[in-house]
Amino acid sequence: MRTVVFVCPFAFEITLRFAAGAAEHPATRLVLISQDRPETFPESFRRKLGGHVVVDNAFSVEEVSEAIRGIAAKTGGIHCLLGTLEQLQEPLAAVREELGLPGVNLEVATNFRDKARMKDVLQAAGLPCARHKRLTSVDDARDFVREVGYPIVIKPLAGAGSKGTYRVASDDEFQEVLAISPPHPRRPVLAEEFMQGEEHSFDGVMLGGELVWHSLTHYRPAPLEVVRNPWIQYCVLMPREVEHPRYDDIRQAATDSVKALGLRHGVFHMEWFRRPNGEVAISEVGARPGGAQISRLLSWAHDFSFYKAWAGIMIDGVYEPPPRRYSAGVAFLRGQGEGRVRNIRGLGQAQRELGHLVVETNLPRLGQPKASSYEGEGFVVLRHRETRVVEEALRRLITLVRVELG
Image 1 (tube, rainbow, N blue to C red):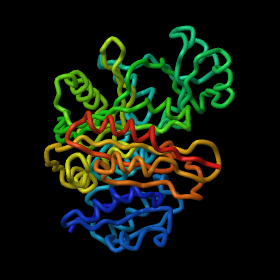
Image 2 (cartoon, one colour):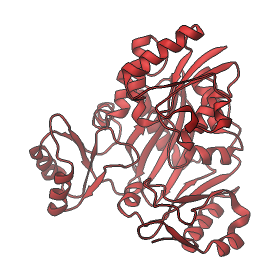
Image 3 (cartoon, one colour):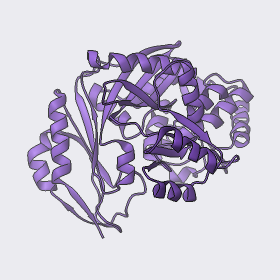
């Protein structure tokens, strides 16, 4: 029986899906490390665990290392250390190095986590990405604007989910953003050119240093536009035709990028653009599963549990997914206004027109407070064997349904 440690700071639903997948993996004892106390987690999940250690700070290298030493003393050793949150990747890598555990090391984790360093690595490898600069002063920011012109994007070096990301298109906006997030030697930020074109994502599995599987999604509209306009109901579309020749260039660029960044084993999630001239450009890459319900879409598109499959990749280095049988898509329902959900319009009509395509829902509840996440107050998942059908249905769904706050 192998002991696997999963760091899950908080009892988030999506994180628990991955943790449950690891807990159900054959010949595996899963021990959880969290900040939330055991009673915070669902009882059905707690029954699957082989242990649970609570720490004050699950992002602390020292606290997680100490907890793992205690677990190892009781179980006879640790097979591997896992965690899916973007913000955990560097601390977990540091713990692996300190305790001699297998997996991504700190150098590779930092390549993925520090977005300025990431783009330096990609540019040095001759791979297409946005012009960028690490800013440590206001003068750095002004120099960058003079070099590339407006619009630009300013964001944290180690951001996630477009949080703290700003599109700057004028001198006035430039001054506003610098007042909110002033660059400093002790707190640098990243500036990059604003890339025009359609934004997509690319998810892949690396085993033995080679890309063994991949998937693609299309954003409608781009995530930064979604963050800037909290009223937008948006969609993520996963096409069935992942092997189509029109994706050949990004398949090669993604493979070369992840190799340059140093990931030999695991799952990665890449954001990329198709520029107006047809060329691809890489935005950023994470050494972890994608957000925006992408793992949920993968499960529906392949008729399997991607969460359990992820555990097989990380614990045994094995990935044998069934073929993609469907296109799948998710529509995120985000409220109009402020306050709590007071009305949901159009659900009946949407059910009559599109109900045969719906495979999962998480609908907003009356009285529910406005969500802090960019995913909004709820979502609907659709699937069909034809990508065109899913794309048109998603567009129709977000036209029909309106979530009103007040």
